[in-house]
Picture 1 (cartoon, rainbow over the protein chains, first blue to last red):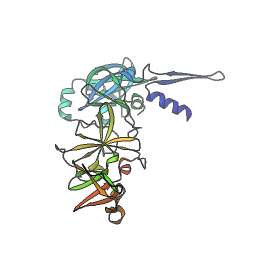
Picture 2: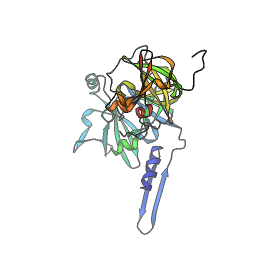
Picture 3: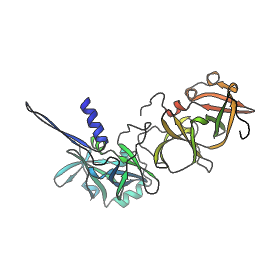
Picture 4: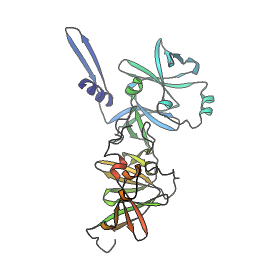
Length: 176
Length: 153
């Protein structure tokens, strides 16, 4: 319980915990924390009409794939990237985004999909997004007490135009 | 309100509209009143949470009061306002159809809610104030915002 609380807290701050255990020798705990907590580099992405931020520290790469490169293993969508099998997360369905014009998007996208490859510890996932906006420094703001504890959302930030964008919690996206 | 000082047995209310009904909340709980702005939807929240807004650099949740009180969905007009309230240490915005005035009503013209309303909505109403011919529904904000019974999603 106590260790889980530490892990949850550290991941909510954008860090991670690694544990190595050797029998009869002991355990080594590695705790990684970001240098600054208030300002982070993030990639802004678009899902439907909504803008979300993904912390750059947990992004491996962004790739374009053709829809037919997405395979399924027991109904879990995956892609094969450089010999590694990576599970796919469709952000629009995780976030219940109403796609404004799904048919128009599908025809436009039948050529390529944007996938952001993220990692948390050893685990990786590919997040399907509608559009990439760009990299930006963002200030992390809390959503406040009332909205605390929402899965997949780590916080919020305010964009240059005053709009509020939500920061995705990569750890809980991967764990889904 | 301008020239007479208000008596100790009066309470000052901010009066706002939702549909055809008039509601009141204590002015002491109101921080400010804003025009409608951009609201960012937050996934996995109850449907009465409209989203979050930017209030001078801080992020505040916004509650759609019509949805919260099970009233029919209204349209956003030029009169739509967001009342920023502070309850216990939670600051939230409430979307209302329009804010009309600030007025003082005597404490003894307020009837407790239990005598005439039943159902779920009764929890959200602390009483009804009578002012001349008007009936002002007084809201129990801590129940509306959900600070009293922690609501889980």
